[in-house]
Image 1: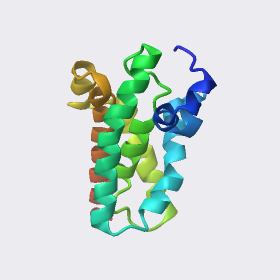
Image 2: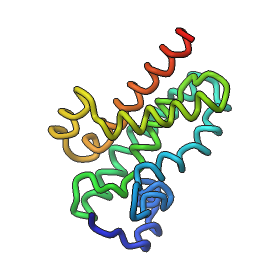
Image 3: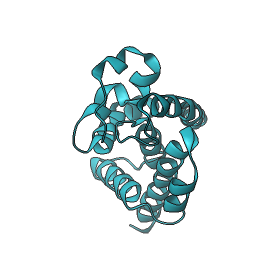
Image 4: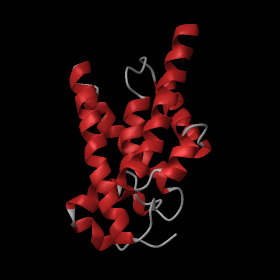
Length: 157
C-alpha cells in the first residue's frame, strides 16, 4: 500500500477522508478509522433520530466527494488509509443501538466483519462501482448489515 504523506492532513478534504489521521496507521487503518469514529458517534447520539439520519446522509454525500478527491491525489482507487467510509458505515451500524457496552462492542465487531468479509452484494459493488461512491458504498452496506443483525439480536434476546 502506498504510504500517505502526513502533510496531506493540512488539507481539510484529506484530513476528513483520512479520518483525522487515523487512516495513516501502517497496519489495519480501517479498524483504526472505525475506532476513531466512535467518539463522533457518541456526539451523534445526542441528536434526535431525524437529525441523526440527516447527519449520516450528509456525511455519506460529503464522503463521496472527500474519498474521491483523496483517491485521485493518491492515485489509488480505494487506498486503505481513506477511512471516512468507515466513519459513516459505523454510524449506520450503531444507529438506534440498544444501551450497554456489549451492544457497542457487538456493533463495531459486526461492522468490521461485514466490511472485511464483503458478503453479497457488497463484494460485487466494491468491484464494479468506482470513484467516491465506490469507496463509500461497501462500508455503507456493511453498516446496514451490522445494523440489521444487531437489531435482530436485540429483538430475539
